[in-house]
Length: 148
Image (cartoon, rainbow, N blue to C red; front, side):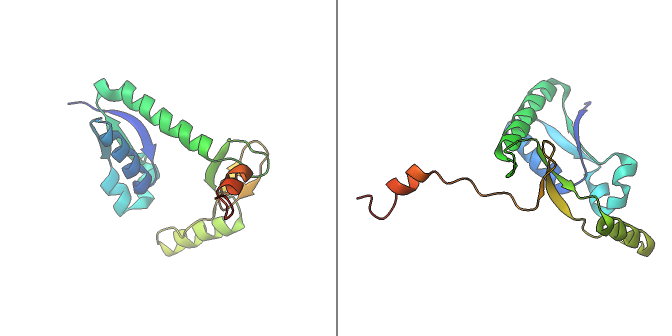
């Protein structure tokens, strides 16, 4: 039985969550090279990461499901400065991350954690924590202590 690659991942956690979502929808899938990348993350780039594989008959349905999840995720995050939904969680470029990478390489150890931020591609604002959902003032007044 031949499978088709629909996505790739650097992290087993992200790959496992996505696979679980497709499993819940009844899509037959598996993670190729998951064990290799989990045991030796340095090989991830060499082998192309963890590959999410689906049956050819399920490919279109899986792509539609994943596109829906991607859309919901993008709509759930907004830049606190400009309100744009063009926000992604990225590794921040900087001296600290480069030094961490070089130190890991020289010591032949797994890479130390890099600094990651949410980056708005609309206004270039970067933030570490997601903003809390805005409070609706009318809801607070109705549910306040004097609402009875």
